[in-house]
Image 1: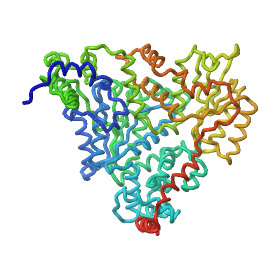
Image 2: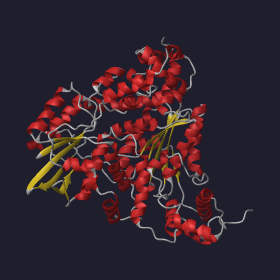
Image 3: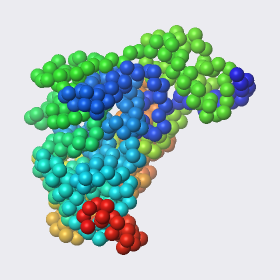
Image 4: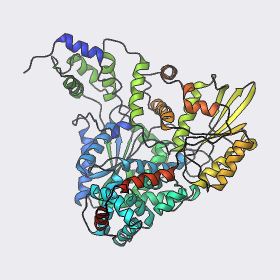
Length: 630
């Protein structure tokens, strides 16, 4: 056995770095992290039970081809960690697709949110090194052509095939439909096949997520324009068809996490009014399960939530029979578990530093850990280690900064999410109430803009403040839609100063307004030229910090940090009043269109042109032959 490192060297490293700091809570983004620290023996029964069901479905040994599990445990025991372990196993083995939902906004639009979570999950890399969407597209293409190509083969040759034959996707769609006559919506197949083109994939995925495309994008890809009103009625059908298409290829494992929120659905909603997050999501999971031809549903929540909140649902028995064939309880730690957990964590730390400790749990005492860990949660033990590892007390502001940096680095796929951007803006504006920014002293932020029917819920919030001794009320609408009708409607509602109690309206949008969007242009001219309103654009680097702050606060460990800690963290590290987007919203309107906006239609044409620019005629011919559409 090698001699241990000197105590001086070990203690110097301990003073400089705390491996437990900010790592004792598994957040939603950790589910997707490639660096996954896992002690397989902890809660092995839970992950093994679920993965065994996947194996049985894939081998045909489970007659129903569907199953449901409820993972039950108090906070901090390891529910999200178990889900992350399942995700990493599926990615390594290719035994299924992992679909994960953990963020819930307006509960009245829960199905649309699930569709977006489904689309986001399938954007993540699968076992073949490409997006799960592209794995599915390859499976469908192979089914239609009767071939067996790898995803990378099709992805590399797709641009050339499209350059020679613009109808390649349509023709390939027809081949797939001939083999899958039960598919009701051929456009879903077409959109999935479009993901094989790197230039078109982002737009195809947006369409699959229920987001609107611009007329030019929709026309180029031959995908129908679905209005927001009609889209809501088709969401359930689209979810069902996407999941069933996945079922042709592999087993979808659908996980619902973070069900223990306290918010209630809008009382005005005749179907969901007054129900809790867990109740609404459980009802959704039941409907998803009913439509599954093959797959697994996993819900992760507190045992208390499972017991108490489902007893009041009239369909509680039906829900339980479908989404929880088996309840899996995660147990609290035993003394041996605690020692193994801490030793495992420290082994990774010391190995990374090239050091050898005198014993496995140095600098802790094993007997103390055994006593402390009997009946504790994983989070409690790791949190205790974080607090007792370093001889130097760390300022909570510095701890929060580390968490913030981790969260910000994981943020992606947000620039089209109007609701998420609006929620982040409204959240951070609360932290500058009483401050004066660009001449406006903020007094409050109104999230409820009434009468709601006047704007159909499109106005996100109202800023109430004072400017030059006069009251100012700024109605704010974030609209990242790619459809002219939706954007036009939003701008129209921003002009309703009298009806909605505004003194000015502010459109927040980073994308261009196309020349042929007549309604949008008419109301924009009215807003800017006649009513003193404003159109504010932004870049990702302006909104990303605000999204990160909002997410950090939502996932804040209240046992480690106070609200005052968080407020001080914002003031010292990320002052909202200096954010360029916030300043633009509050500044005097320029009356001009912003100079820097994204023209999505031109961007799509540019990306596609770049893909095909270097292709030779032979490469294009080969690509057409590969796709059997020559």
